[in-house]
Length: 234
Image 1: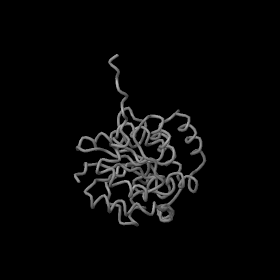
Image 2 (image 1 turned 90 degrees about the vertical axis):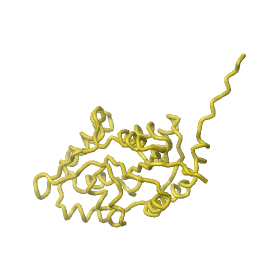
Image 3 (image 1 turned 180 degrees about the vertical axis):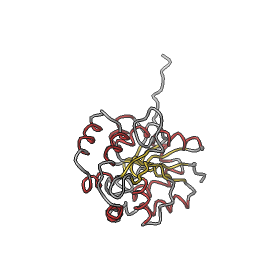
């Protein structure tokens, strides 16, 4: 059976990772003030890039403390097998995250997956040894996110084939409107349902592994294509 070429974009925090990395860092190392930034972001007064830049500046930790913390965080147990299966099926997968590149590389590195293509915010030391700063190499004009996932989706589409998004939350809402299909977790399920975006709900990458062959052979997308009502000539 001839399969359709797909490009896969996959969120990290709460999708690949079991928990949100930046939230866990703020809970442990954040100085006072990061909660107010979080409230401003949730209320829509600031974008995620401004929020995270301010929050990262409030992290009080040495690199050794950061590494030790990251080494205690885990990913979905089936994600490595999903990556292997994508490689076997010659299907590209790129991690697209509004999180921290250093953290993602460190966590994925324990599983031999730190060579996956990645778009994320850049975490770098500021004033040594305990201060940190955030830059956003994948931001886009007019987008308030640190990583513009819509731009990543457009780039994926430009290479040909179709695009699948795997995600879970608000940072994935906009990109979901610009891809061909979504494997959705948590809040992203409700967004896709309300917006009429073709999707299937998943609980993790065991589900994604099971669904992948049906995505590639076209049957999954065909099942979710909207059937337009017949137009009467009378």
